Length: 162
Image (cartoon, rainbow, N blue to C red):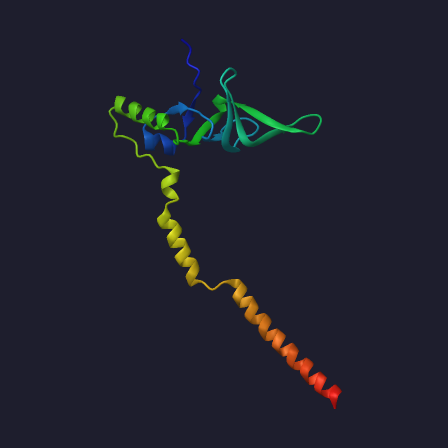
């Protein structure tokens, strides 16, 4: 039976973190191109062509003859995974299985949902309450300018009445 998964090398940080050298790429992973004419570019994976072993990356396009921009598919051997999308539970379980097989400690998986917690939102809103809003400062300055203009208009009006 043929394996349809496309394994891509992990960058050095992920290798140390998870204890593995490569992992199957899926839509949502963040990759960087490490060789070829587009070296150094990268982004989120938006498509995987398992038949040709090519990957489409967000923001990397090529212009057609009629001027349209189309997805540019990069060969899997020219890529390095810089961030894994672990939102699917199967991928997290796969990491745990691999580390258990190699007798390594289980990986510490960071989730994006945990980073945007309610506590952080509350802290931000409290910090924003302490700072005065720019609109009130502008309105105070405008009031001062308007009052000085009104005073000068009143004085002009008094001169006209005399």
